[in-house]
Length: 279
Image 1: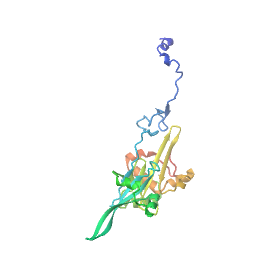
Image 2: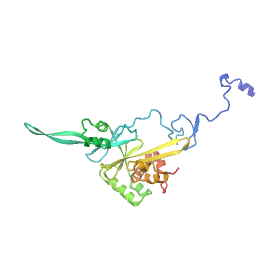
Image 3: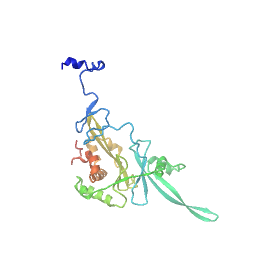
Image 4: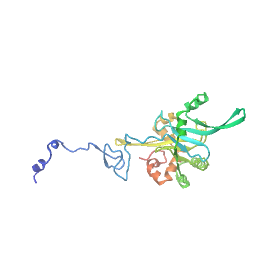
């Protein structure tokens, strides 16, 4: 069949398309598979790289109850005014109050709450307690509970960390105050820590975020509330050293102790002894 006869079968409105290009597709930075530019993830099922989240993202969990191993009721609550990845701690409890009446003394139990956001703490100490803060209200209505992550001693022994770090992690893990690491959302976890003025409850938040772009190398970020904002803005070499805090190692060990989590956070598990992420 002659080429001219083929051209006659092409509709007139497609006759001026020109040469085919790669417009509208992009190569996955991890496996090399070509995907549409509007795709949210790689179509290669064995890769599964997430390019971006859709416009209809799942709403962040407002409040999650922490497993404390005691009667202590602690909640991880989202700070709405700061963004989806900012969370604080709220402690709920019951206090007893005595009331003098004509018939005698009555003992009444009242529910109480304590929010550890600095602004809310300041308002409470100044007597501004007519209404509970929004974080306490969210904790009171909480229906979700954190997911505990296991820690295998064999994984802890194999991790590239100092003996002092391993010993501290094991001590925290064996304390009867709940799991060492608990998952709150997809990216945010709660880790046990030594009680201090900044973390008086003995818990803190960490987050693991990975951003993948077709135009650049994957960007991996770890943040721990034991770090200051100033250290987060330091240069790359200093930031890598700061990132490897004891709570980072605690999370890494928890990830490596579970096959599913090890696959999900494989990029964070692949770091060398110098503290740099393996690309």
